[in-house]
Image 1 (cartoon, rainbow, N blue to C red):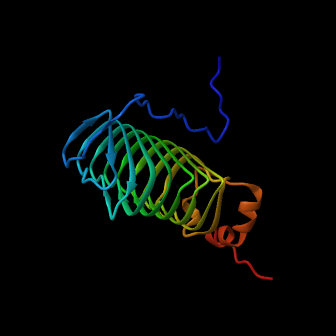
Image 2: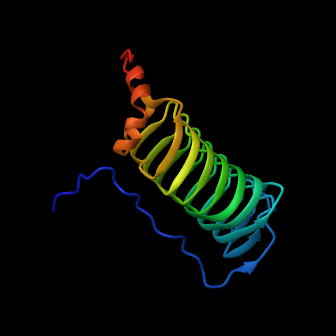
Image 3: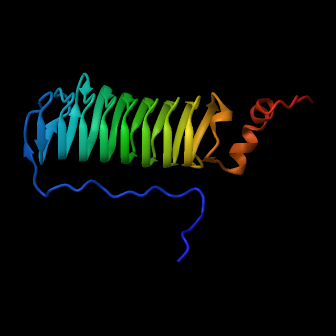
Length: 214
């Protein structure tokens, strides 16, 4: 049977595979955590987490350089949730209020972010395959030099999107209500609705070298 060529291709996602019971445990920097429920405020930089749930409030949630496999972060309330340079496979972030969600430089496969309020979401220089961002309110979406494959937004709004140097394949922006894109020339590989394109018509024309005058 011929493979479907419909575009954009939808994300290929499955929820994190979690055990029915999780053991409460403290987190450790460079630690190895399996099947645990961990307070969000623990220093988990460069730790390995498998089949774990993190939740709660923290002054900073530190997971820089960590490895996450089948992990949920639930109702996070923190000024900074750092997953910078992390390696991720099947992560779900549900609910919460986050100042900065930093996924810059991360390698991500299968990410779900839903019903969260995030001031600044950074995927700068990240490699992301298969992600869905649903019902989220964002102030800034930072995508410079990111590589996004099969990433979809649904019911989201954002003030500004930085797309400079973005590389996209099946990036579905039809569900993202954005006030501004910093570089429309980097939207190749993205899908927009007709009204979205109409709203960007002047910017697209000028990027193509067309002199627009009334």
